[in-house]
Amino acid sequence: MTTTYNCTSDDERAQGLEHAQRAISEKKCVVFPTDTVYGIAADAFSPQAVTMLLVSKGRSRTMPPPVLIPRVNALDGLATDVSADARKLAEAFWPGGLTLILHAQPSLDWDLGETKGTVALRMPDDEIAQELLTLTGPLAVSSANRTGHAPGQTAAAAREQLADSVEVYLEGGFRPLEGEAAVPSTIVDATGPRLRVVRNGAVSLDQLREHVPGVLGLGEIPMAEEGPVEAAPAAETPVEAAPVAETPVEAAPAAEMPAEAAPAAETPSGSSVVEPEAPGAAEAPAVPAPDRDSRP
Image (cartoon, rainbow, N blue to C red; front, side, top):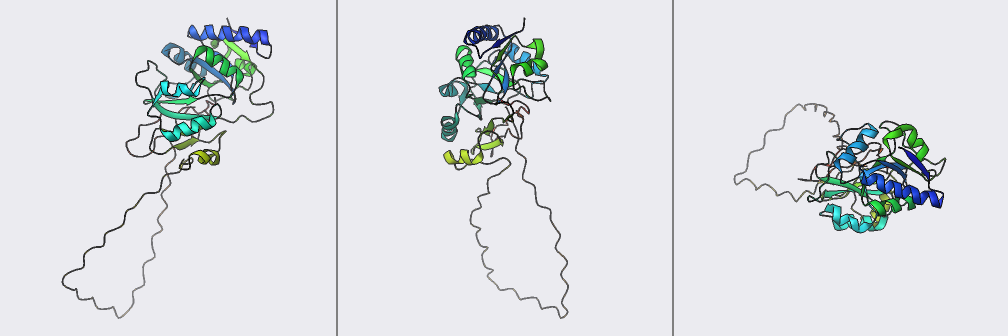
């Protein structure tokens, strides 16, 4: 039976968190506030629960949800080959509006969808979200709405779309504040040799570059590093110059060559996305198509 708890009341908040923890353990979905908008969550380590989350939203496995974590040190338990630059951003902006796409730990028994070996991680800056994550551990989370519709900014708005597919709704008021536009997290692909923004959001590129100057912006590609060109050896026998034509020939106009468009950034995990960036240079693994309306 679906239940909504008013988490602005201490008593109901405690009851709601307890019920939500139980629902997660039973492979059911819950809705709760984050620092961006409301999210629908399920046990990240249960394929059954993740499937229920995707079905509730009306989406396929090609749009895997990101994973929210309660602590920065959970990073190494869920991801591998975390670069020093990725750690700098996590330490600077977690908890907060930054999602990092990383190589998933291959030993973990989970199935978030077609992730191509990656996982999108974030630590939300919201008290209720942190309390729930501390009780449950990492959760697969997507924006609390049906795919193609506006994300819920209250639990009540989320319930209008998701109805009985969710066991527990934790109501904490507007996220963000009433009248303010919802801003998704910024998504940075950290699976390649250079960090790349794949979706713009709460953390600006300038803020990212204060900590990691080499971060590539959305759609940017690194300049090719061309080495010096070796001059061709001089001919041993001089070649006789061709005579100059007596009548000048009018040069044909140069063909206007269209500029080659910079490749669009591939988007991965999670949200209204112009993002999820995809891997950078050579041999970088493919990043899953980002969750186009998953804002948490």
